[in-house]
Image (cartoon, rainbow, N blue to C red; front, side, top):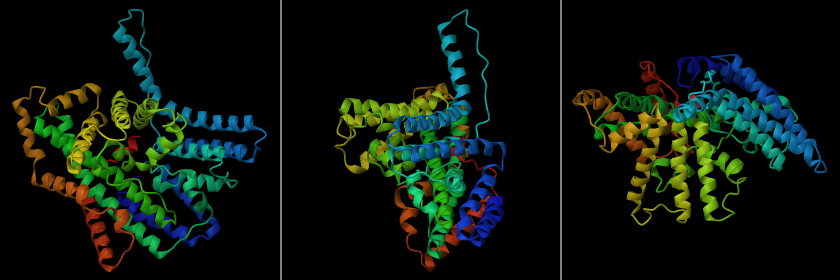
Amino acid sequence: MVFSSHIFLFYFLPLSLLVYYCTPRRGKNVILTVVSYLFYGWSNPLFTLLMFASTLIDYCCGLVIGLTGDNRPGRRKAALVCSLVANLSLLGFFKYTGFALESYNQFFTLLGDSFFNAVPVLKFLLPLGISFYTFQSMSYTIDVYRKDGKCIRNFLDFACFVSMFPQLVAGPIIRFQEVADQLLSRVHSFEKFARGVAFFSFGMAKKVLLANSCGRIADITFSAGTVHWIDSWYGIVAYSFQIYFDFSGYSDMAIGLGLMFGFVFAKNFDSPYCSSSITEFWQRWHISLSTWLREYLYIPLGGNRKGSGRTAINLAIVMLLGGLWHGASWNFVAWGGLHGVLLGSERLLGKKPFYAVLPKVFRVALTFVLVLVAWVFFRAETFSGALNYLGSMFGLVAVPNTSLLLDGLLYSPYHLMAMIVAALVVWGAPQTWDWSRQLGLVKAIIVVVVFILSVAVLSMQSYNPFIYFNF
């Protein structure tokens, strides 16, 4: 089930809110947990068993860590290791088994070993949101171990934290310490609910009106093989808009739904394409993942405490693993590695890009170009396909005359209008986070109009993918 679907908008969400608000305060977490499990198991009920297993393991490990005194550090560490191994094994088995076996076969094929027998590649159906809820669940045991939070004794409260459906399948990644107090007590108000509706409406508009339209353009250019250099740049810009509006739209909807249920989640996007460096880009893009990687991977590796050289290496390692987190493919490794190199080089230059002397408008433009080049690896189906597309972008491959036939599809008035509006929103519109702080009559009317328009367009669309559902 996706947020931008009629069954969610007109059946699941209204009924969930009705039951939730009719339930006494002590039972609200129970209802939210039950609703979240129904939401998650809608497409495949077996997925709920995996999430429940992860939840149960981390709950028990958290109790052991939290209730064990400092005089028994070995026991606390063993519980933490158990939690980490269980979650990473679950994630690794379902997400990376096939990739590891394929890479093994490819490696020995390149060596030309005549005695090598290819290993059968096993592929498993990837449970929705497993990359998100395993990270979220692990943050709990790590925070309790670090004493950044107290363990939860009520299992249902912890199950609510892990399974909360607004951010379950595509984030943002909510760290335990951010919502620990809210799980015990939170405020429900008309103002908070109204702001949640505004967040949800604009998030759905980003998804339905902009991401889906730009996604069509990206699909055409990436599936065409070789295209003219202008078309290839047009296509990757379209994809950059698609993934931004797709993911930030989902995050807005998740934040909005959280507000409707009384929770306040942190901002996950902060106009990332306005960044004037790659360092700044990662302070603005998918903030919850960046924060998670910094707190639970970068800092434990040593952070910036061991000199600029080691800092650059730590950044490269974190981004390589961050790329692999997004998907089991060498394309994602290349995407993460490219960002790691750029971040490391900026750190060596004092957190500045090599084009730091340029005026800000040019720094923003160059940062966007670097992000576009990296997005090619993120979008392409294969590594060779990514290299071929980059060749098209820089005029290094021969373009057949038949590529001109794509112009009628790529540059239709509808697609051009979608790209123009997307660009205006990216670089000119206020953020939902700021715009929705105070809602008056005029803003309320705008929210209603945007929602009705999004629902109307949704009813006519058959193309409605969520990119981050694949991760």
